[in-house]
Structures are given as C-alpha cells and as structure tokens.
Length: 229
Ligand SMILES: [Zn+2]
Ligand SMILES: [Zn+2]
Ligand SMILES: [Zn+2]
Image 1: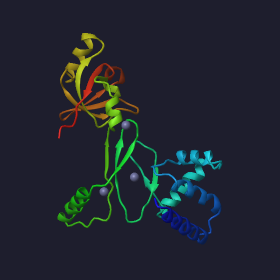
Image 2: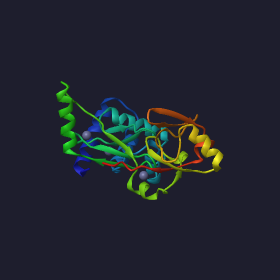
Image 3: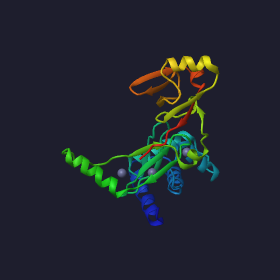
Image 4: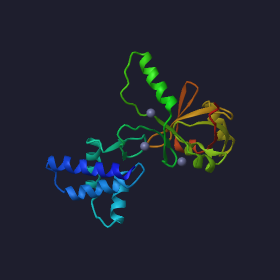
C-alpha cells in the first residue's frame, strides 16, 4: 500500500476513535501501524507476534479486538476461510481481489480477473439481480503441495473435496475383499467428503456415501486425480 494512503488511514482512524471516546488510542494506533506494515492475511496471533517482536507486549485478546474494530470501521477486511481461524487483510477502498486457498498448507494467493468479474455481474444481471459485492474463494492444493505429494497416499491423508482413485490396499487380501464388498475396489474414483474431525471418514462413490473408520481408511491407498480441463 502507498505510504500516503497509510498516512490517510492513520489520520482517519485517530479522528474517528477519539470522537468515539475510545481508550488506549496510542496502543490501538501501534496495532494499526503494524497491521498496515504487513501485506498478508493475518490472524490475531500472528499480528500479536509481530508486535511482540517490535517490543510491544500487548495481549492477543486486545490485538484481536482491535482487528475486529478495524474491520467494523472499514480499515480492515475480515476473512473467514473454511477450516481456518479469522484472518484480516487491508481494505483498499475501491479495489477488489479474490482468493485461492491451499487446503494442505493454508497458503493464500490473491487474484483479480476482469473476465470473471464481468461474468459474475452478467450472471446476476440475467437473473434480474443487482450485485453489490461477492467473495470468490477457490480451495485446492498450491503448486508446492502438489509437487510434494507422494504418488500413492493412504486415504486418511487426502483432504476433503479431493477426488482420488483407489490404487491398492495395505493389509492383505482380507482387507481388500472387505473393502471391495463395500464398493471400494481398485480403480474406483471417490470424492473425499470428510477427512478430519471426530467420527468416520466419509467418501462418495458416484451417488453413494460410504463411512469408513480410521483403521480401515488407512489401509486404502489412493492417488489424486488431476482435474482435467
Ligand atoms: Zn472478485
Ligand atoms: Zn500448499
Ligand atoms: Zn486478500
């Protein structure tokens, strides 16, 4: 962000919050300053760490409270990406971008496509809808995580939303017969519906959902199916 733009935000913030009668204005300004000095999508914990490294010992609760405050007043934008704690980024007035989120390492990439933007407005318009704002989030695997992937992984290591192919079984013929009997034979394509959290792992094969205990799922070896476009 431009230095001048930062200075304007700083000034607007001071005027606004002094008028609101807020306490600890100087500390809040330091938090804003540190926030504006970054160019990523930060969590409250990450910003607290940055402040601590600068020699300011502020509690994570106070930092998080200020990030929410900045969002409410339009200085920051809160982002709630699926599977992640809230993150905050700068809010550049009049500018817009969308996000790619890696479900494996959590990396966030920004993009702006005039074609997609125009198409979204057009889709809305055709339905008699006037669009005001939108958020486009594409979840997947970043190039680094794609490279790091082993050709075959246990099903328990696949992420929700991934399409994988069953390429083998660990644990002998008995396990293979049992799983094949459940519709999970070699060569079957499945979509991972739920891969973490309590309860069984859920996969879908065609229209059928299949629940698998962790002990069984770890015996199924899969490889990822690349999206063919
Ligand atoms: Zn967009
Ligand atoms: Zn990644
Ligand atoms: Zn962003």
